[in-house]
Length: 514
Image 1: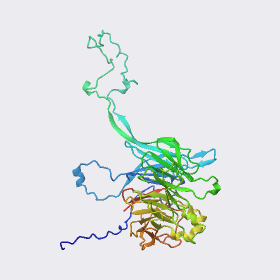
Image 2: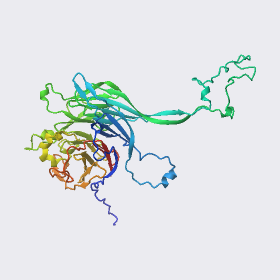
Image 3: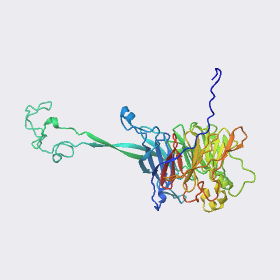
Image 4: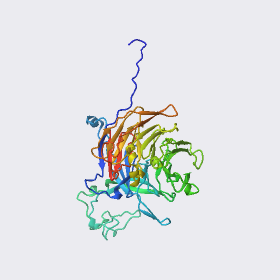
Protein backbone atom coordinates (compact mmCIF):
# COMPACT_ATOMS: atom_id res chain seq x y z
CA UNK A 1 0.00 0.00 0.00
CA UNK A 2 1.39 3.39 -0.96
CA UNK A 3 1.66 6.21 1.54
CA UNK A 4 -1.35 8.24 0.37
CA UNK A 5 -3.78 5.38 -0.05
CA UNK A 6 -6.86 5.12 2.15
CA UNK A 7 -8.76 1.98 3.05
CA UNK A 8 -12.23 2.17 1.55
CA UNK A 9 -14.83 0.21 3.49
CA UNK A 10 -16.90 -2.18 1.42
CA UNK A 11 -20.53 -1.08 1.12
CA UNK A 12 -22.71 -2.77 3.70
CA UNK A 13 -25.53 -4.68 2.05
CA UNK A 14 -28.95 -5.51 3.47
CA UNK A 15 -29.02 -7.94 6.41
CA UNK A 16 -29.30 -11.63 5.60
CA UNK A 17 -32.73 -13.27 5.92
CA UNK A 18 -33.32 -14.71 9.36
CA UNK A 19 -33.55 -18.44 9.95
CA UNK A 20 -36.57 -18.83 12.21
CA UNK A 21 -36.82 -21.73 14.66
CA UNK A 22 -39.53 -22.99 16.96
CA UNK A 23 -39.03 -22.04 20.59
CA UNK A 24 -42.08 -22.76 22.75
CA UNK A 25 -45.80 -23.37 22.69
CA UNK A 26 -48.31 -22.77 25.48
CA UNK A 27 -51.79 -24.29 25.36
CA UNK A 28 -51.04 -26.66 22.51
CA UNK A 29 -54.14 -28.59 21.53
CA UNK A 30 -54.07 -32.25 20.62
CA UNK A 31 -55.28 -33.57 17.28
CA UNK A 32 -59.04 -33.48 17.10
CA UNK A 33 -59.42 -31.41 20.26
CA UNK A 34 -62.22 -28.89 20.01
CA UNK A 35 -61.26 -25.34 20.87
CA UNK A 36 -63.57 -23.53 23.25
CA UNK A 37 -64.58 -20.06 22.13
CA UNK A 38 -63.61 -18.48 25.48
CA UNK A 39 -60.05 -19.86 25.19
CA UNK A 40 -59.21 -18.19 21.88
CA UNK A 41 -56.45 -15.60 22.34
CA UNK A 42 -57.51 -12.08 21.36
CA UNK A 43 -54.53 -9.90 22.44
CA UNK A 44 -50.74 -10.25 22.83
CA UNK A 45 -48.28 -7.71 24.23
CA UNK A 46 -44.64 -7.69 25.37
CA UNK A 47 -43.60 -5.17 28.00
CA UNK A 48 -40.85 -2.65 27.19
CA UNK A 49 -38.09 -4.83 28.62
CA UNK A 50 -39.27 -7.98 26.90
CA UNK A 51 -39.09 -9.87 30.21
CA UNK A 52 -42.87 -10.22 30.47
CA UNK A 53 -45.55 -11.20 28.00
CA UNK A 54 -49.31 -10.83 28.44
CA UNK A 55 -52.14 -12.45 26.52
CA UNK A 56 -55.86 -11.84 26.72
CA UNK A 57 -58.61 -14.16 25.53
CA UNK A 58 -62.27 -14.08 24.62
CA UNK A 59 -63.20 -15.32 28.06
CA UNK A 60 -61.96 -12.07 29.65
CA UNK A 61 -58.83 -13.64 31.18
CA UNK A 62 -55.34 -12.15 31.16
CA UNK A 63 -52.42 -14.60 31.33
CA UNK A 64 -48.91 -13.40 32.20
CA UNK A 65 -45.64 -15.09 31.25
CA UNK A 66 -42.17 -14.21 32.51
CA UNK A 67 -38.78 -14.73 30.93
CA UNK A 68 -36.58 -17.37 32.56
CA UNK A 69 -33.34 -17.48 30.54
CA UNK A 70 -32.07 -14.18 31.96
CA UNK A 71 -32.51 -15.16 35.60
CA UNK A 72 -29.31 -15.18 37.65
CA UNK A 73 -28.88 -18.75 38.95
CA UNK A 74 -27.18 -17.41 42.09
CA UNK A 75 -23.81 -18.96 41.38
CA UNK A 76 -20.42 -17.38 41.96
CA UNK A 77 -18.62 -15.74 39.09
CA UNK A 78 -16.08 -18.58 38.93
CA UNK A 79 -18.85 -21.17 38.69
CA UNK A 80 -20.59 -19.17 35.99
CA UNK A 81 -17.36 -18.98 34.00
CA UNK A 82 -16.94 -22.74 34.23
CA UNK A 83 -20.42 -23.38 32.88
CA UNK A 84 -20.49 -23.78 29.14
CA UNK A 85 -23.28 -21.37 28.22
CA UNK A 86 -23.92 -20.65 24.58
CA UNK A 87 -23.09 -17.08 23.64
CA UNK A 88 -26.59 -16.23 22.54
CA UNK A 89 -29.63 -17.84 24.13
CA UNK A 90 -33.09 -17.33 22.72
CA UNK A 91 -35.80 -15.97 25.02
CA UNK A 92 -37.61 -18.62 27.05
CA UNK A 93 -40.76 -17.91 29.00
CA UNK A 94 -42.80 -19.66 31.65
CA UNK A 95 -46.31 -19.25 32.94
CA UNK A 96 -46.46 -16.66 35.73
CA UNK A 97 -50.09 -16.10 36.68
CA UNK A 98 -53.53 -15.36 35.30
CA UNK A 99 -56.58 -13.44 36.45
CA UNK A 100 -60.10 -12.69 35.34
CA UNK A 101 -59.98 -9.17 33.95
CA UNK A 102 -63.51 -8.71 32.58
CA UNK A 103 -66.88 -10.38 33.05
CA UNK A 104 -69.83 -10.37 30.63
CA UNK A 105 -72.13 -7.41 31.26
CA UNK A 106 -75.46 -6.15 30.01
CA UNK A 107 -76.24 -2.56 29.07
CA UNK A 108 -79.84 -2.15 30.18
CA UNK A 109 -80.24 1.28 28.61
CA UNK A 110 -79.29 0.04 25.15
CA UNK A 111 -80.33 -3.61 25.62
CA UNK A 112 -76.90 -4.76 24.53
CA UNK A 113 -74.70 -7.55 25.79
CA UNK A 114 -71.12 -6.49 26.48
CA UNK A 115 -68.67 -9.29 25.77
CA UNK A 116 -65.89 -10.08 28.20
CA UNK A 117 -63.41 -10.48 25.33
CA UNK A 118 -60.10 -8.65 25.85
CA UNK A 119 -59.54 -6.33 22.89
CA UNK A 120 -56.17 -4.84 23.87
CA UNK A 121 -53.53 -5.07 26.59
CA UNK A 122 -50.91 -2.42 27.28
CA UNK A 123 -48.11 -2.57 29.85
CA UNK A 124 -47.49 0.40 32.12
CA UNK A 125 -44.39 1.41 34.06
CA UNK A 126 -43.34 -0.93 36.86
CA UNK A 127 -42.94 0.33 40.41
CA UNK A 128 -41.64 -1.33 43.60
CA UNK A 129 -41.41 -4.71 41.93
CA UNK A 130 -45.08 -4.67 40.92
CA UNK A 131 -46.36 -5.03 37.36
CA UNK A 132 -49.01 -2.67 36.02
CA UNK A 133 -51.10 -3.08 32.88
CA UNK A 134 -54.21 -1.83 31.16
CA UNK A 135 -56.78 -4.17 29.65
CA UNK A 136 -59.99 -3.35 27.84
CA UNK A 137 -63.03 -5.02 26.39
CA UNK A 138 -65.56 -3.24 24.16
CA UNK A 139 -66.60 -0.70 26.79
CA UNK A 140 -64.52 -0.76 29.97
CA UNK A 141 -60.79 -0.24 30.61
CA UNK A 142 -59.19 -1.58 33.77
CA UNK A 143 -55.87 -0.78 35.43
CA UNK A 144 -54.31 -3.83 37.08
CA UNK A 145 -51.53 -4.24 39.61
CA UNK A 146 -49.85 -7.63 39.86
CA UNK A 147 -47.59 -8.06 42.88
CA UNK A 148 -45.98 -10.80 44.90
CA UNK A 149 -47.39 -11.13 48.40
CA UNK A 150 -45.38 -12.89 51.11
CA UNK A 151 -47.18 -15.48 53.22
CA UNK A 152 -45.32 -15.93 56.53
CA UNK A 153 -45.17 -19.21 58.41
CA UNK A 154 -44.32 -19.26 62.14
CA UNK A 155 -42.34 -22.06 63.80
CA UNK A 156 -43.97 -24.16 66.53
CA UNK A 157 -43.23 -23.22 70.13
CA UNK A 158 -42.04 -25.84 72.61
CA UNK A 159 -44.98 -25.44 74.97
CA UNK A 160 -47.61 -28.10 75.35
CA UNK A 161 -50.59 -26.91 73.25
CA UNK A 162 -53.02 -28.61 75.64
CA UNK A 163 -51.95 -26.28 78.43
CA UNK A 164 -52.36 -23.03 76.55
CA UNK A 165 -55.36 -20.83 76.02
CA UNK A 166 -56.26 -18.40 73.30
CA UNK A 167 -54.12 -15.53 74.56
CA UNK A 168 -51.04 -17.71 74.92
CA UNK A 169 -51.02 -17.81 78.76
CA UNK A 170 -50.61 -21.03 80.72
CA UNK A 171 -53.95 -22.62 81.56
CA UNK A 172 -53.59 -22.75 85.32
CA UNK A 173 -55.63 -21.09 88.00
CA UNK A 174 -52.74 -21.05 90.41
CA UNK A 175 -50.41 -18.92 88.34
CA UNK A 176 -51.91 -15.73 89.73
CA UNK A 177 -52.16 -16.81 93.35
CA UNK A 178 -49.12 -15.93 95.36
CA UNK A 179 -49.64 -16.08 99.13
CA UNK A 180 -46.36 -14.33 99.84
CA UNK A 181 -46.25 -10.56 100.24
CA UNK A 182 -45.05 -8.61 97.23
CA UNK A 183 -42.76 -5.62 97.18
CA UNK A 184 -43.72 -2.18 95.93
CA UNK A 185 -41.97 -2.64 92.62
CA UNK A 186 -43.85 -5.86 91.89
CA UNK A 187 -41.17 -8.25 93.13
CA UNK A 188 -41.53 -10.79 95.86
CA UNK A 189 -39.65 -11.15 99.05
CA UNK A 190 -39.74 -14.94 98.64
CA UNK A 191 -37.98 -16.25 95.55
CA UNK A 192 -39.82 -19.52 95.79
CA UNK A 193 -43.12 -17.92 94.80
CA UNK A 194 -44.62 -20.06 91.99
CA UNK A 195 -45.41 -17.65 89.17
CA UNK A 196 -46.15 -20.38 86.62
CA UNK A 197 -48.41 -22.65 88.60
CA UNK A 198 -48.06 -26.25 89.55
CA UNK A 199 -49.00 -27.61 86.14
CA UNK A 200 -46.18 -25.92 84.26
CA UNK A 201 -43.10 -28.01 83.42
CA UNK A 202 -39.92 -26.62 81.91
CA UNK A 203 -38.40 -28.30 78.88
CA UNK A 204 -35.60 -30.75 79.65
CA UNK A 205 -32.94 -28.17 78.80
CA UNK A 206 -34.31 -25.62 81.23
CA UNK A 207 -34.77 -21.91 80.47
CA UNK A 208 -32.06 -21.75 77.75
CA UNK A 209 -33.98 -24.26 75.66
CA UNK A 210 -37.09 -22.08 75.49
CA UNK A 211 -37.43 -20.69 72.00
CA UNK A 212 -39.42 -17.76 70.76
CA UNK A 213 -41.59 -18.20 67.66
CA UNK A 214 -39.73 -17.26 64.51
CA UNK A 215 -40.65 -16.97 60.82
CA UNK A 216 -39.53 -20.19 59.19
CA UNK A 217 -40.59 -19.53 55.59
CA UNK A 218 -42.00 -16.77 53.48
CA UNK A 219 -43.87 -18.26 50.55
CA UNK A 220 -44.84 -15.82 47.84
CA UNK A 221 -48.05 -15.78 45.87
CA UNK A 222 -48.97 -13.47 43.01
CA UNK A 223 -52.00 -11.30 43.57
CA UNK A 224 -53.72 -9.29 40.82
CA UNK A 225 -55.74 -6.33 42.02
CA UNK A 226 -57.84 -3.96 39.95
CA UNK A 227 -56.73 -0.47 40.92
CA UNK A 228 -59.03 1.58 38.71
CA UNK A 229 -61.91 1.16 36.28
CA UNK A 230 -62.33 3.62 33.42
CA UNK A 231 -65.92 3.21 32.26
CA UNK A 232 -68.88 4.97 30.60
CA UNK A 233 -66.77 7.05 28.21
CA UNK A 234 -67.40 5.25 24.90
CA UNK A 235 -70.67 4.84 23.01
CA UNK A 236 -69.02 2.56 20.47
CA UNK A 237 -66.65 -0.39 20.79
CA UNK A 238 -63.14 0.40 21.99
CA UNK A 239 -60.61 -0.71 19.37
CA UNK A 240 -57.37 0.73 20.82
CA UNK A 241 -55.64 1.84 23.97
CA UNK A 242 -52.15 3.33 24.03
CA UNK A 243 -49.84 4.55 26.79
CA UNK A 244 -48.22 7.93 26.60
CA UNK A 245 -44.45 8.26 26.99
CA UNK A 246 -45.02 10.63 29.93
CA UNK A 247 -46.09 7.62 32.03
CA UNK A 248 -49.13 9.48 33.32
CA UNK A 249 -51.75 9.42 30.56
CA UNK A 250 -53.18 7.09 27.93
CA UNK A 251 -55.72 7.21 25.13
CA UNK A 252 -58.66 5.01 24.27
CA UNK A 253 -60.27 5.01 20.83
CA UNK A 254 -63.59 3.79 19.48
CA UNK A 255 -65.12 4.13 16.02
CA UNK A 256 -65.79 7.88 16.31
CA UNK A 257 -63.88 9.29 19.28
CA UNK A 258 -60.49 9.26 20.99
CA UNK A 259 -60.38 10.05 24.71
CA UNK A 260 -57.39 11.10 26.81
CA UNK A 261 -57.18 9.72 30.36
CA UNK A 262 -54.98 10.27 33.39
CA UNK A 263 -54.04 6.96 34.98
CA UNK A 264 -54.85 8.38 38.43
CA UNK A 265 -58.31 9.69 37.51
CA UNK A 266 -60.95 7.17 36.48
CA UNK A 267 -64.09 9.30 36.51
CA UNK A 268 -63.03 11.92 33.96
CA UNK A 269 -61.53 11.88 30.46
CA UNK A 270 -60.99 14.48 27.76
CA UNK A 271 -62.31 13.99 24.24
CA UNK A 272 -59.48 14.96 21.89
CA UNK A 273 -60.76 13.58 18.56
CA UNK A 274 -64.41 13.45 17.49
CA UNK A 275 -65.24 12.50 13.90
CA UNK A 276 -68.96 12.00 14.51
CA UNK A 277 -70.94 14.09 11.97
CA UNK A 278 -74.02 16.06 12.94
CA UNK A 279 -76.05 13.71 10.76
CA UNK A 280 -74.98 10.06 10.96
CA UNK A 281 -76.05 9.61 7.35
CA UNK A 282 -73.05 11.75 6.40
CA UNK A 283 -70.63 9.33 8.08
CA UNK A 284 -68.02 8.19 5.55
CA UNK A 285 -65.18 6.79 7.68
CA UNK A 286 -64.48 5.57 11.19
CA UNK A 287 -61.41 5.35 13.43
CA UNK A 288 -59.85 1.88 13.34
CA UNK A 289 -56.68 2.21 15.44
CA UNK A 290 -54.77 4.83 17.45
CA UNK A 291 -51.34 4.97 19.04
CA UNK A 292 -49.17 7.48 20.88
CA UNK A 293 -45.75 8.43 19.56
CA UNK A 294 -43.11 6.41 21.49
CA UNK A 295 -41.08 9.45 22.61
CA UNK A 296 -43.08 12.65 21.92
CA UNK A 297 -45.87 12.87 24.48
CA UNK A 298 -47.76 15.45 22.43
CA UNK A 299 -48.06 13.41 19.22
CA UNK A 300 -50.31 10.52 18.29
CA UNK A 301 -51.53 8.85 15.11
CA UNK A 302 -54.83 7.25 14.23
CA UNK A 303 -55.97 5.33 11.18
CA UNK A 304 -59.29 5.23 9.39
CA UNK A 305 -61.45 2.83 7.42
CA UNK A 306 -60.54 4.72 4.24
CA UNK A 307 -56.88 3.73 4.48
CA UNK A 308 -55.53 7.05 5.74
CA UNK A 309 -53.37 7.84 8.78
CA UNK A 310 -53.57 11.17 10.58
CA UNK A 311 -50.83 12.54 12.78
CA UNK A 312 -52.06 15.03 15.37
CA UNK A 313 -50.31 17.36 17.80
CA UNK A 314 -51.96 17.89 21.18
CA UNK A 315 -50.25 21.29 21.52
CA UNK A 316 -52.24 22.82 18.67
CA UNK A 317 -55.71 22.71 20.22
CA UNK A 318 -57.77 20.94 22.83
CA UNK A 319 -59.93 19.22 20.21
CA UNK A 320 -57.65 17.79 17.53
CA UNK A 321 -60.13 17.27 14.73
CA UNK A 322 -57.68 18.93 12.36
CA UNK A 323 -54.57 16.87 11.73
CA UNK A 324 -50.95 17.96 11.45
CA UNK A 325 -50.16 15.46 8.70
CA UNK A 326 -52.18 13.12 6.52
CA UNK A 327 -50.73 9.92 5.10
CA UNK A 328 -52.61 8.15 2.34
CA UNK A 329 -51.82 6.42 -0.91
CA UNK A 330 -53.30 8.00 -4.03
CA UNK A 331 -55.81 5.74 -5.73
CA UNK A 332 -54.70 4.41 -9.10
CA UNK A 333 -56.96 5.58 -11.94
CA UNK A 334 -59.46 2.96 -13.06
CA UNK A 335 -58.76 0.62 -10.18
CA UNK A 336 -61.85 1.40 -8.10
CA UNK A 337 -64.29 -1.42 -7.40
CA UNK A 338 -66.94 -2.42 -4.87
CA UNK A 339 -64.20 -3.81 -2.61
CA UNK A 340 -61.77 -0.88 -2.84
CA UNK A 341 -62.74 0.82 0.41
CA UNK A 342 -63.20 -2.44 2.31
CA UNK A 343 -59.71 -3.75 1.57
CA UNK A 344 -58.19 -0.28 2.09
CA UNK A 345 -59.42 -0.11 5.70
CA UNK A 346 -56.47 -0.12 8.10
CA UNK A 347 -56.84 -2.65 10.89
CA UNK A 348 -53.70 -1.81 12.90
CA UNK A 349 -50.91 0.77 13.13
CA UNK A 350 -47.64 0.67 15.06
CA UNK A 351 -44.89 3.24 15.54
CA UNK A 352 -41.31 2.12 15.07
CA UNK A 353 -39.21 2.27 18.21
CA UNK A 354 -37.58 5.57 17.20
CA UNK A 355 -40.90 7.10 16.13
CA UNK A 356 -39.66 7.85 12.59
CA UNK A 357 -41.84 5.28 10.83
CA UNK A 358 -45.43 4.06 11.12
CA UNK A 359 -46.40 0.54 10.08
CA UNK A 360 -49.98 -0.02 8.92
CA UNK A 361 -51.89 -3.16 7.99
CA UNK A 362 -54.81 -3.28 5.60
CA UNK A 363 -56.40 -6.42 4.19
CA UNK A 364 -54.05 -6.84 1.26
CA UNK A 365 -50.77 -5.27 2.37
CA UNK A 366 -48.62 -3.85 5.10
CA UNK A 367 -47.21 -0.41 4.46
CA UNK A 368 -44.33 1.44 6.06
CA UNK A 369 -44.74 5.21 6.25
CA UNK A 370 -42.05 7.82 6.88
CA UNK A 371 -43.58 10.59 9.00
CA UNK A 372 -41.38 13.08 7.12
CA UNK A 373 -42.79 11.97 3.75
CA UNK A 374 -46.53 12.34 3.26
CA UNK A 375 -46.59 11.72 -0.51
CA UNK A 376 -47.14 7.98 -0.05
CA UNK A 377 -45.84 4.92 1.76
CA UNK A 378 -42.10 4.43 2.04
CA UNK A 379 -42.50 0.71 1.31
CA UNK A 380 -45.38 -1.65 0.56
CA UNK A 381 -45.35 -5.40 1.17
CA UNK A 382 -47.94 -7.63 -0.48
CA UNK A 383 -49.50 -10.10 1.92
CA UNK A 384 -52.81 -11.17 0.34
CA UNK A 385 -52.38 -10.20 -3.28
CA UNK A 386 -53.11 -13.81 -4.28
CA UNK A 387 -56.57 -13.42 -2.72
CA UNK A 388 -57.65 -10.64 -5.08
CA UNK A 389 -59.53 -13.03 -7.44
CA UNK A 390 -61.42 -14.43 -4.43
CA UNK A 391 -62.68 -11.15 -2.93
CA UNK A 392 -66.31 -12.05 -3.70
CA UNK A 393 -66.03 -15.30 -1.74
CA UNK A 394 -64.22 -13.50 1.07
CA UNK A 395 -67.01 -10.95 1.23
CA UNK A 396 -69.67 -13.66 1.35
CA UNK A 397 -68.06 -15.43 4.33
CA UNK A 398 -67.09 -12.14 6.05
CA UNK A 399 -63.37 -12.99 5.95
CA UNK A 400 -62.71 -9.73 4.13
CA UNK A 401 -63.50 -7.94 7.42
CA UNK A 402 -60.84 -9.82 9.42
CA UNK A 403 -58.56 -7.48 11.34
CA UNK A 404 -54.92 -8.57 11.20
CA UNK A 405 -52.31 -6.97 13.44
CA UNK A 406 -48.76 -6.00 12.47
CA UNK A 407 -45.50 -5.48 14.35
CA UNK A 408 -41.94 -4.22 13.86
CA UNK A 409 -38.67 -5.58 15.13
CA UNK A 410 -36.87 -3.57 17.80
CA UNK A 411 -34.11 -2.60 15.34
CA UNK A 412 -36.67 -1.54 12.73
CA UNK A 413 -35.18 -3.81 10.03
CA UNK A 414 -38.14 -6.17 9.70
CA UNK A 415 -41.92 -6.22 9.91
CA UNK A 416 -44.36 -9.07 10.45
CA UNK A 417 -48.08 -9.77 10.10
CA UNK A 418 -50.47 -12.71 10.10
CA UNK A 419 -52.50 -14.47 7.43
CA UNK A 420 -54.79 -17.45 6.93
CA UNK A 421 -54.02 -21.14 7.55
CA UNK A 422 -52.19 -19.99 10.72
CA UNK A 423 -49.42 -18.47 8.60
CA UNK A 424 -47.51 -15.28 9.25
CA UNK A 425 -45.13 -13.33 7.05
CA UNK A 426 -41.84 -11.62 7.90
CA UNK A 427 -40.46 -8.97 5.52
CA UNK A 428 -37.14 -7.18 5.54
CA UNK A 429 -37.59 -3.43 5.21
CA UNK A 430 -33.93 -2.36 5.11
CA UNK A 431 -32.89 -0.73 1.83
CA UNK A 432 -32.17 -3.42 -0.77
CA UNK A 433 -33.60 -6.27 1.31
CA UNK A 434 -35.65 -8.93 -0.49
CA UNK A 435 -36.42 -10.96 2.62
CA UNK A 436 -39.95 -12.38 2.59
CA UNK A 437 -40.38 -15.39 4.84
CA UNK A 438 -43.56 -17.40 5.42
CA UNK A 439 -43.96 -19.36 8.65
CA UNK A 440 -46.71 -21.55 9.99
CA UNK A 441 -47.71 -21.41 13.65
CA UNK A 442 -46.78 -24.98 14.55
CA UNK A 443 -43.91 -26.89 16.12
CA UNK A 444 -42.52 -27.52 12.65
CA UNK A 445 -42.90 -24.20 10.85
CA UNK A 446 -42.86 -24.46 7.08
CA UNK A 447 -40.31 -21.98 5.84
CA UNK A 448 -40.02 -20.65 2.36
CA UNK A 449 -37.85 -17.74 1.31
CA UNK A 450 -39.58 -15.74 -1.39
CA UNK A 451 -36.70 -13.98 -3.10
CA UNK A 452 -38.15 -11.52 -5.58
CA UNK A 453 -36.34 -8.55 -7.09
CA UNK A 454 -37.21 -5.15 -5.75
CA UNK A 455 -39.46 -3.13 -8.00
CA UNK A 456 -38.86 0.56 -7.33
CA UNK A 457 -41.40 3.21 -8.12
CA UNK A 458 -40.45 6.85 -7.93
CA UNK A 459 -42.15 9.08 -5.40
CA UNK A 460 -42.44 12.85 -5.48
CA UNK A 461 -39.36 13.06 -3.32
CA UNK A 462 -35.97 11.59 -4.01
CA UNK A 463 -36.69 8.64 -1.69
CA UNK A 464 -37.32 5.36 -3.46
CA UNK A 465 -40.27 3.32 -2.42
CA UNK A 466 -39.93 -0.44 -2.72
CA UNK A 467 -42.77 -2.81 -3.57
CA UNK A 468 -42.27 -6.52 -3.07
CA UNK A 469 -44.70 -9.24 -3.93
CA UNK A 470 -45.22 -12.59 -2.30
CA UNK A 471 -46.77 -15.64 -3.88
CA UNK A 472 -49.73 -14.73 -6.08
CA UNK A 473 -51.30 -18.08 -6.96
CA UNK A 474 -55.08 -17.86 -6.45
CA UNK A 475 -56.53 -20.29 -3.92
CA UNK A 476 -53.23 -21.31 -2.36
CA UNK A 477 -50.98 -19.73 0.19
CA UNK A 478 -47.32 -18.85 -0.21
CA UNK A 479 -46.36 -22.48 0.42
CA UNK A 480 -48.62 -23.94 -2.25
CA UNK A 481 -51.18 -25.26 0.25
CA UNK A 482 -54.91 -24.76 -0.06
CA UNK A 483 -56.18 -21.90 2.09
CA UNK A 484 -58.11 -22.44 5.29
CA UNK A 485 -60.08 -19.29 6.13
CA UNK A 486 -61.26 -20.70 9.45
CA UNK A 487 -57.73 -20.73 10.90
CA UNK A 488 -56.38 -17.20 10.93
CA UNK A 489 -53.43 -15.69 12.72
CA UNK A 490 -54.68 -12.26 13.76
CA UNK A 491 -52.50 -11.43 16.76
CA UNK A 492 -48.72 -11.36 17.06
CA UNK A 493 -46.00 -9.35 18.82
CA UNK A 494 -42.27 -8.87 18.27
CA UNK A 495 -39.87 -8.92 21.21
CA UNK A 496 -38.64 -5.31 21.76
CA UNK A 497 -34.94 -6.19 21.86
CA UNK A 498 -34.45 -9.56 20.14
CA UNK A 499 -35.60 -11.42 17.06
CA UNK A 500 -38.36 -13.34 18.76
CA UNK A 501 -42.03 -13.41 17.78
CA UNK A 502 -45.04 -14.52 19.82
CA UNK A 503 -48.18 -15.32 17.85
CA UNK A 504 -51.62 -16.71 18.62
CA UNK A 505 -53.23 -19.59 16.73
CA UNK A 506 -56.69 -20.04 18.27
CA UNK A 507 -56.01 -20.93 21.94
CA UNK A 508 -52.30 -21.70 21.46
CA UNK A 509 -49.42 -19.29 21.97
CA UNK A 510 -46.44 -20.06 19.72
CA UNK A 511 -43.00 -18.49 20.08
CA UNK A 512 -40.21 -18.40 17.50
CA UNK A 513 -36.68 -17.04 17.49
CA UNK A 514 -33.95 -16.37 14.94
